[in-house]
Length: 288
Image (cartoon, rainbow, N blue to C red; front, side):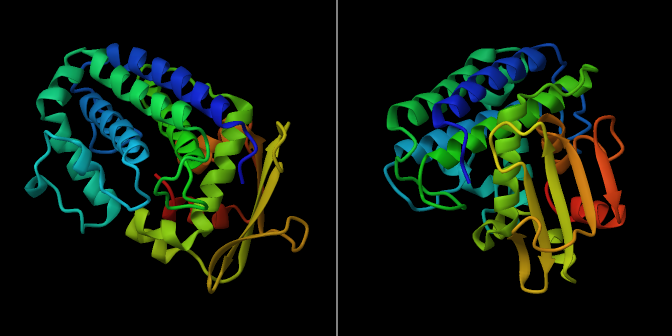
């Protein structure tokens, strides 16, 4: 599943989080972030700070047991969140609560230091412990390499969210983005990951439709994935083993924001052939 070096993913976290904090510093805290409905720039900053703090805490905690993000935030009381709520609702409530905390207010007022420090703590945990450090994950081996990919994904996608408000076009690393496409699709087919999806994921098609995702100008990864929407649940099939109902092709840096619903299938550089409704239905029921 992983073909990009752990430390290159760490370097991507460093690069993307730097772009992210620069973009956030240019936004008024109350500015709506259109790709994160219901969130402002202050909420987005608080979300990233909470996420980086959570990942760093898990990595340094010396356990492979799950602990929710608010357990690592001293300024969010247990009664402010419902850890038993569906994951998106929990994250949304946590984000708003953290944005109103002293740390969240300081970040919103232009203080980059807390967000930069949280990113630095995550990077230190990832780089000092290496890719095989034991840690809880919802995908594959309980190893730190997952959190390097997760951090690169969070920083990169939310950088796009902030820069889109400023009118900037997507600008991600092609090879790293292709790696993250692979991780995203692996998450879709991993039963343990389902608890972290929107409840609408349970309404995903299960009639055997097949989606071929192809990365143009592949940077060393498999280059393509055949996703089967099977009655027993989504699965990755061997490319070429069956005819796809729809094929989506684009360079990695466009496939990633497409699969995260930051750009539409009609965006320049993306080519869709076959039954486009299958792709649209998939996008409507999976990631945000």
